Image (cartoon, rainbow, N blue to C red; front, side, top):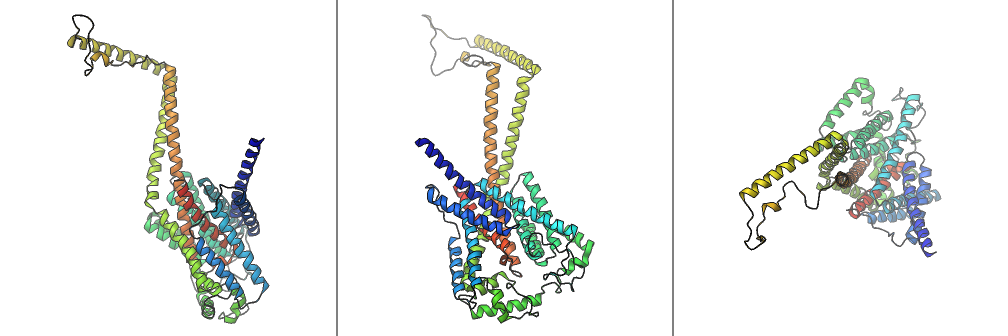
Length: 532
């Protein structure tokens, strides 16, 4: 009875682990498709994680690399709310709901992703979600959607623009920022993983997401992606520069006027209008340098600092990630956020370029070669032991060697005869080895049968194959970890570059994805340490 209860307890603990990981995967999958469902998954998963923490003595709370800046960011954001010039219950509700989801997401991913297999599941969930988003963009572009009446399209500047896709997002710029992150993640896997299937899928993902990105007509994310690819081409693979040049030439040849219009000052939100918003954000920082105007309070406070030409247009954020942070939660809060943000980015980029991971491709290729050789040897062995002709040939070879060894031993007996005592049996010198003991062509212990040879050969091949594939799996897992690291670093770089002209983190899917990837980066470091 006691044994049954122990097994039942272990099963319950295992169920808690499984459901916590499933909550992570559900949030990852739904965050870009149904953000409300992703939020429910985050809350549910956090509850399951907390229960497991209470009942499982072996499941410990672990410290992540940037817990301190995250904690400071949360505390200073709370301080900004209570010192905000805006006294609004909705502001307090947004703080607890939005920041609460962010913190739960950070804890859920960082505390529950503890094995390489779970990291792989996370990558698959994110890839499948990105695929659905991209297909949604293709669907909108093919079947058409009239965006002329939507506020984020300038009908006068672009009278022919009727297909600016946004897929499952609320805004093409938000979709473009998400696609930048997805492309960077795929690029990281392509750069570090040597498996042909994964590299092929990564290349296809990059091309599909890039095509969807062009359909958004968002200039900032497109420039960001070009910068990242140029950096990658200069530092890693110059062939990517040729690919960029070919793609740019094709686009310019196909529709040069529309492509060049993406980079003119007549776009939806011109540089001049953004400058006006930045001036207002700087004025907010000057008036509220310590506590800020309140987390997510920019839209409510900005009319007091408006430098925007069209007063009737609502400005939700500062169109600059870092100015927006400093204005809303103060300079200290913005510094805490930058500590977490850039710390995660640089750690991921530096560790992904570590010498240990640079050598992995060579090691994996050698292991794969050995595995292939082992398979070939095993196949040849099977042919050898099942072919009657080869068996007869082997027997003839063995007979010939036996005759040659007997002839050799006979000649040695005549040339070097064994000395014997007159009184009786010969006495051997313990320090010398007589030629009779050499037994050329013979094995002590009797002759082995064909079945014994088959068993030995099969066992050797199986042991060799098992060893090779174990090494190959370890090398591939290390490559995936390194690729995820690089993908996270490049994704944060894309968010930072896009953040210079837009605050994509003001949108729930993008913000959730950023917190997920940050926690994943910290968790991956611990996974690598724990699994060697």
